[in-house]
Image (tube, rainbow, N blue to C red; front, side, top):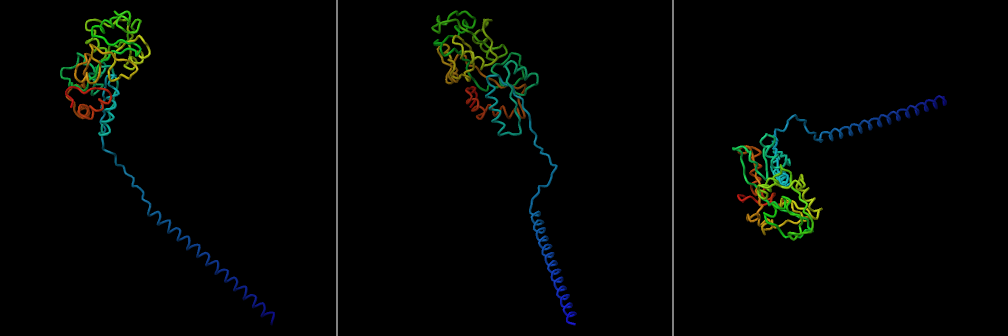
Length: 306
């Protein structure tokens, strides 16, 4: 009987342990489920607070208007700077500025390849109804190497010089040796002006070198002690020396007063009175903002400019 009782007690104890173990597992399982629910609930709450942009198929209706501008080579850096300034205030306009020799710039305008031309020389074949407005001025400076002590020249002497009639600079008080002449290509506005105002009925000697750009003239004259050429006063950089002409130096003051003999006027040209983007840019260029940009690049305001 005692053995039977002992077995019964052992079985009862084992049953209790199994019950407690199952209860413990049940409680552990419940804790895990509860913790999982809390984590998922928190994640769900987090997802609800994330702001996701709503996809849209709406397309901007802003229209960018293209404006093609051609400019004489010596004016191009200034006009490019003006275009950049205008576009900052008018992002709806995209301006492309292309450098061209003056005669080629006018041709591009007449052929419809450009909307606006800014040139240093007006060709004689422009259409009668073309819209033309003075925009700025500069001087065409006769430049020599810094080693050449020639004090200056008259218009007549410049004509003789570029005809090839001067054999030695020393004859005029300059550096001893024969002048090395450098001129511009015939499509250049600088060449057209020099031919009309200095050479007149005479022609530049065939012995003169032809430079493709203002920078090329400056580089050649700066590196050749006996060289002489002509460039825009706005491009003078201290490497060459500009001659006084008829006793007048090519200063901004002399150009503004109209005293320098080789003062030239630049023009903005369109085929007819400008409208749209062309009108806005031209008005800006002729007004104070544009004139300030041109002045910062060494040019002088046209007589009509404020």
